[in-house]
Length: 270
Image 1 (cartoon, rainbow, N blue to C red):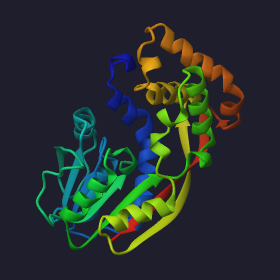
Image 2: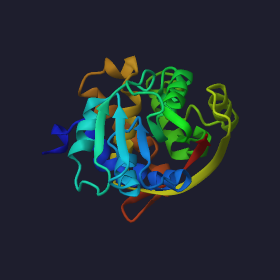
Image 3: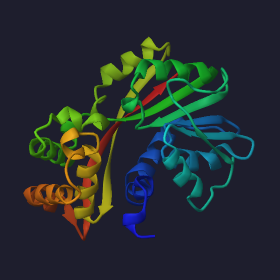
């Protein structure tokens, strides 16, 4: 299948999954310390990086549920090989704001880069607490502020300028980067102990040009000015932004790869 025939979920898994999601999943699980036989919910699972990594850790006596609102993401996750050992992954379509799951069904809820996208973060956190048992814990990974991600900031600023839009239309991924705000959200949802720790990794992405294309097009997907562009105009916009930011992208490129730091908050709540 050519890339033009691939779905957005397939392109995400192929290009971003191993480069960004998987390394930060390892960090998330270092903090979560799942136990054998734990029942684990991977909330806003996407294509299931967290679920695939946690399944061998909880073993066949455990449970691994990957839940996401996007069926295309789940379909790609379900089809991704190899199938991990340990707990068989249950792929479930669902809404984090209204989980179709019983009370106290899980020992551990994990959420990697999902909380900032929920339309009602407080409701999602209340649902998270509801499905945890009394001794359960939740661990979230949430990108820190956009100012700590200069490559993304430059791309978003350029895209906003070209489309006469506001940068807030593009930076949702980095919209919950304040540690105090994160802690307050968790405490208001009823979690009694909340610890927030910053972690940074260098990510390595093949083809810097492809990264610019995917980032600009992905960020602008919901912006009316981009939506109303003709199919011929959109790649010209991406090309113009790529040329404008060429020196910056080159400064982070080495050996055909784009290498730059990304920083997240890991939030452990009990």
